[in-house]
Amino acid sequence: MGIPILDTLLDVVKGPLDKLIPDKNARQAFEHELEMEILKAGLGQMEINKAEAAHPSIFVAGWRPFVGWVCGAALAWQFIGRDLFLWLQAAFLPDLPAPPALGGSDTLVTVLLSMLGLGGLRTVEKLKGVNRDTWKKR
Image (cartoon, rainbow, N blue to C red; front, top):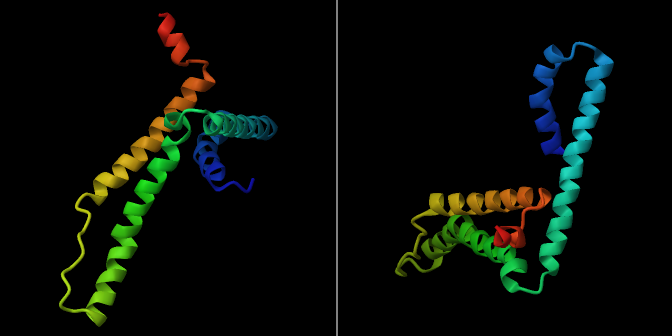
C-alpha cells in the first residue's frame, strides 16, 4: 500500500488471517476493508488535529508544539549538541569545563512517548464523542 506503518500492521494481521479465512477472495476483501478502516481513523485524526490547532486557547492549540519543541531540543542537545560541543571543546578549548549533561534522557523519552500516547487516547475519546461537556453533565 505504500504506508510503512500500515504495511507493518497488516503483516502482523495477515499471518493469522491465512488460517482464519482460507478463501483467498474473502481474505483479500477483509484485508481491503481493514485497510480502509485504518485509513479512516487516520483521516479522523487529521480532522481532530485541525480542530485543536484552530482552538483559541493556547492550552489546547499549543500543547503539542510545546512538548514537541522542548523534547526535541532536549534530545538534540543530549545526543548531538553535547557531543559536538565536547569535540569542539577538546579541539579548541581544552581548559573549559564540560557542559552539563541531561541526566534523565531515558525519562525524557518516556515522557515524550507518554504524551504522544495520551494524545492518541484523547483522539479515541473524541472519535467516540466523549468530551468535556459530556463529563460535566454527569
